[in-house]
Image (cartoon, rainbow, N blue to C red; front, top):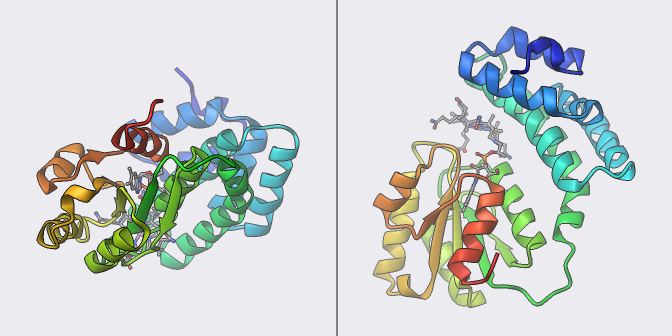
Length: 249
Ligand code: B12
């Protein structure tokens, strides 16, 4: 089993040691960070300290030296955000700091997106993606969109705070066959169910397959709301979308 001393970045090591108290989270993060390459942990450290120019530069450098875009995203950008999430939850940092970290993450993601999205092939299916009404979190949704585009889906991004009517209108306007909803707050999760009910009331529920995700969402909750599928992360989102669209892989 990996130990704190195995993490090849002093700043990340100290932050983890100081701020992560839960044993399960400590073990999981120690494992993740000790496996990550030092140049990727530097990206994580830049995100954690909200240094967007460094996140930008280090991401470019990592890609230039041949590290795969997915690895840079998982072991650099998302890995940095994992510690941000814990510090925010435990009230060690507050909204302005989290926004600075999210901005740094976006500065890195700008370089990942075109690589993951590069595919000149006929779209597998059209997907409408949005964060539900009342919810402004979009980092996870945007990651899903990047990977969906990279896998060959055409994605129409409705952004955040999306009403049921906006989802339904977009499906009709674009002739989409898949809908993906994201929610990060327990208070906005029920809006996924309300949106599904609105699809039923508008008599268009059978025209689309609906997938849901976001940190507080569970497969059981997805089932109860009447969604067709749940995905735990961006990679699963693509797998689920392929399954719902009836395409191989
Ligand atoms: C960044 C962040 C913010 C930023 C958002 C910036 C942005 N542009 O998104 C800001 C500062 C604005 C913010 C605001 C708030 N936040 Co906030 N935020 C976070 C934080 C730290 C990280 C979220 C994140 O981006 N995670 C990283 C991404 C990659 O993960 P993800 O979103 O889960 O997405 C992955 C999967 O879930 C999945 N997925 C996501 N969507 C979908 C969709 C489909 C279809 C599929 C298949 C999969 C899928 O794939 C993604 C990629 O792998 C979380 C803490 C946490 N650990 O989650 C709190 C958190 C979500 N926020 C929280 C809170 C309370 C708030 C505020 C209410 C705070 C306040 N007092 O104002 C406001 C709410 C504003 C609003 N109306 O939405 C709470 C929610 C608690 C709860 N149980 O409801 C959390 C959990 C923090 C905590 N207290 O522990 N927040």
